[in-house]
Amino acid sequence: QISLLVGFISVNTSPWTDYSAYSYFQIVTMCDLVMILFFYIIHIFRIYRKLTCVSWPLAEFLHYLIGTILLLIASIVAASRSYNLNGLVAGATFGFLATILCVLSIWSSYKVSCITQSTSK
Image 1 (cartoon, rainbow, N blue to C red):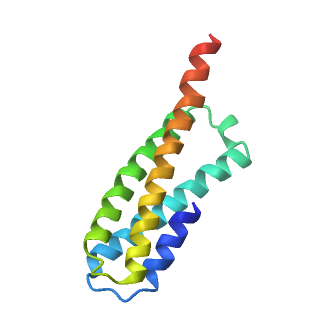
Image 2 (cartoon, rainbow, N blue to C red):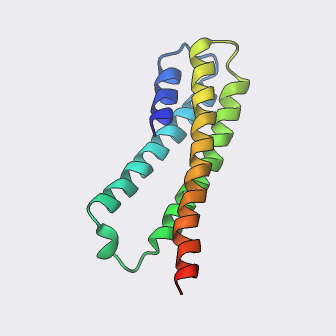
């Protein structure tokens, strides 16, 4: 989550050369940050116990999967259009780091929700 925030700040404070590429990067990072905050609030206040109609492990898995794919695309676009501007290169680098961390989150959420449930039966 911190790497997303650092990537967003790096891109936001840099002089842009291609507005569409960096606007897309900013939108993707902010949407990921908002959704991560949303799932943290759900877990902190244990809202998942009251809303049993939603499969929360599946919702979290899909959130990380879709967010990771969009973040990877945004990081590739930002890296290809950075034109050696330090802030934009840093933003793309932190975007790639956040992509790797999101893949690890996908694996850990799958491991916790699917593997532990199947072995407990």
